[in-house]
Length: 636
Image 1 (cartoon, rainbow, N blue to C red):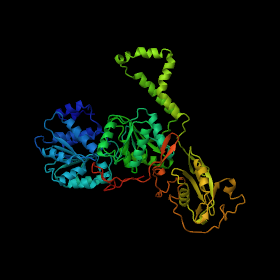
Image 2: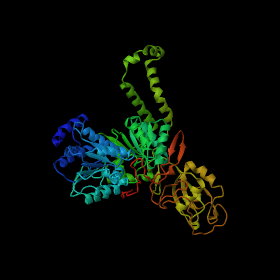
Image 3: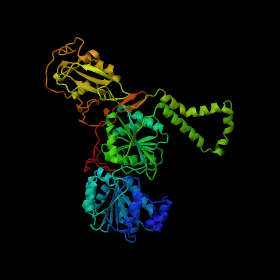
Image 4: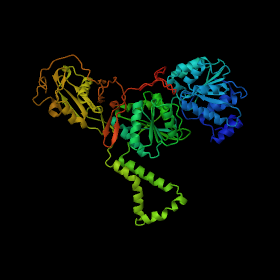
């Protein structure tokens, strides 16, 4: 591996980056810097977030720019305010020992008048978000006539945020005689279109495998019931006492809900989503960077462009809708040759996504058992002992209190003293996890070969309506949904026969279900009755007249179908329903409609509404409607 000096970096820049802790170039830097220093060329570089791309394009640009000219010679576009500020600050640090080198960030949410004033003084490099850059160009406040370089950093994320039209508009206003440098973690079709349309035979550099994640990240998944997702998150947080993580949720509402519950349960956590003002967002991010927060609960869009060092974990509370987005999430840990862990909390219906991720990313995902209460307590105990063993003692300050402390505690033996000090903190874990349930579920098969949920009991029920009544699986789910109004009850196998049917339900709701169906429930004007199936009812025996049914009344043949209130794929063997919500056939979204239900002393969350919330334009930041100009991504 070459040194920065061998790559041809200016001595003044070498001095600055040495003070910043740069020792040896990272792979993307070693590959890109010589190319940009030796030739004027268009370039496409594929490398994961956090692999040193800013220095890869920033160091060569600094050396190639004419410092005597006051014209803007390089434009760096990036998706978010945070990344914009970070890149600008990094370049300022690189040019610490170069006189009169000027770089400014321009982004939404800040005073445009102040930015215009700074631009009027002349600037060598502009770092900008697309929206604000286009605004300044349309106002005629930026002179790009001498522009030599355009850099797109995190290009795939800009496209995913709906900036494609803005990117095209900016490129169209730049001089034809320039070099375009495009840096991206993945290579979607839209990136290739930009390369073909605005680049002239670009050099393509790929560090690692295309569209794969960082080699320093280990990938794990946990299987649980959907309604216990939050309890699993708590177990993970308690099992890793030094956790420093971003937890990704699908919607703003779920993000805030999970963060609020973590705070309520005593964790140092907060939420980051599009409903926050820029001031609130900056405050949350500052606390997280200072590690005053251990866990940041965020949506994908709100977390775009975040650059936080030393994350230990990325936790997928829900998997993203696009496979490519998982790469961005997991790439936020395991940076700068450090190791990281990416965790996905899944229910059994989502298990197939693991195989898709493994094929797409070329990574192996390891199934991990959710820690038991005993394992959590053991981990916390030894973590506490390690902290006590390595704590720095302030001898001067503590000595003045020791006589009184010794007098107070001299009746205790060494063993008793140790036990009591440890118990001060440890007792809360012992009390909380005493008799803690096993949250793991495992896929098992019954005698019919159908997959079943481990750790979850089902009861088989008989219902006195069948095909002749026009009932189908989705109608049966809708009927139960209308009667019960419960969001997180599981329905297992459904068997529709000619004049009656069988279905399985979560045993925890059996009594509630039987009681609810005693209240004169009707389907197509026919009174409906249910009872627990037994060997007699399964065989159709017991002396009952199946054509008459249990509920009495006349059976009326009907070809009509009831909409029920919850539609599902009729081929699904295991279902849950969401209190009147509609689901597309084949949808693999989270269960539970975002409801929260008490589960002992903990609150369990249902995993969102099952619909992806839209982002509206936030004029105080650089968010855009996610679907505006958004490229088609590979979905699950």
